[in-house]
Length: 244
Ligand SMILES: C[S@@+](CC[C@H](N)C(=O)[O-])C[C@H]1O[C@@H](n2cnc3c(N)ncnc32)[C@H](O)[C@@H]1O
Image 1 (cartoon, rainbow, N blue to C red):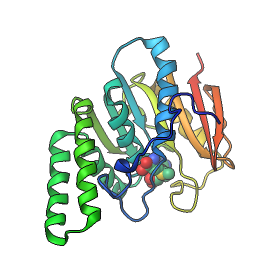
Image 2 (cartoon, helix red, strand yellow; image 1 turned 60 degrees about the horizontal axis):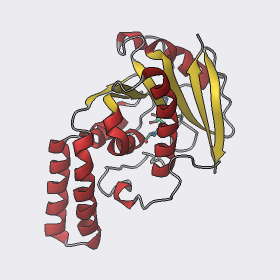
Image 3 (cartoon, helix red, strand yellow; image 1 turned 90 degrees about the horizontal axis):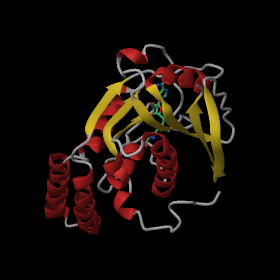
Image 4 (spheres, rainbow, N blue to C red; image 1 turned 180 degrees about the vertical axis):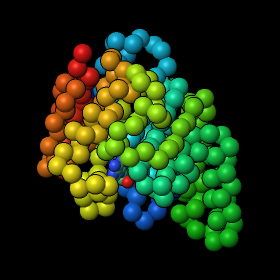
């Protein structure tokens, strides 16, 4: 796969999980360059149909919201609303802590925590994290306006409409569970197909769904048409649009 937007590999160490963004055992991160490339491919398509309006983004398997937080820090100006949900209530505590970094108060709290750690232990890692936090803090001016919703939803069960309004989401981006660290909450034959049909009413007709899966996972996208697909390392990425 060739990068079309993130052509240059940059240094993303400010975004490293556990440095400024929070981490915990069992949570997964996501390559920042790849997340940024995928979202720009989605934006290219959605912008053609929707023009310059503020957009809504949703990750229905958000885990600790590492992917969403990094996307918002890099591309927050594109969005007005951000939805994050997961079936696991405990991981959502991590998601809330990470999404709070998109607010001036949340980032200030994190900087104060890191200052306290540096004062107590004087470690280089804390000094470096403080320098990263100060650089990420500058990006918060592009995210402070975001309306953020973080909630517990089982995307394999119907009923999303009660929580997320029909035709309200412009971009769904999600890296679905892939086994060892994160697995689907139910052992069913076609979890991706079930998720997509549950998501369909929430996605605008001109919206885009970006799915990140492993190469072994099959994507049967009823109600959606495949726009593009590419592979990178162990991951397969699919961009889908709703069928009219
Ligand atoms: C690979 S992780 C996502 C990591 C996330 N992108 C991040 O950046 O932190 C997949 C997530 O899917 C969640 N999941 C599993 N079954 C689910 C379901 N039925 N509904 C919603 N989320 C589910 C898991 O709890 C896990 O957090």
